[in-house]
Image (cartoon, rainbow, N blue to C red):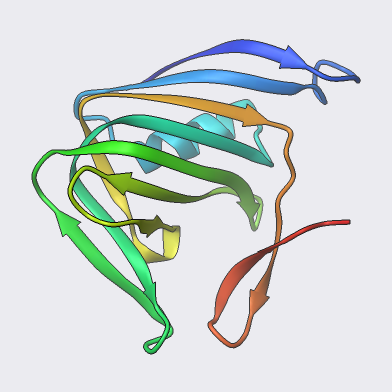
Length: 152
């Protein structure tokens, strides 16, 4: 995995400005481990990312309302990542990844740490990470999952 700071915007100090990074994952890189390490290294606490590329050996999941739990989707062949969007937040002081992905031959699924998602890059994967947006969430006891909220 390689990364580069490609932009800074906004008011404030170097530490508080919005930053945009380009992140390139290479063949065989494991995405979640790489993203968490990147977020920790850069001190990211509230970030948003988008990505395209190709994955193989993918574990995704979707929330099954009746079960109140995620159903895993295991994919062992290459899939095209048509769109991947998500956030990095902190969970007990550690980076937490939450994302949604559209792949080349399945419907939409959710990428969450409690599903145990993983993905290895099959060719390349380009990511853009913007730090400075601040999503908040709360634990919804009806589904026992964190739900996004707007901090006003």
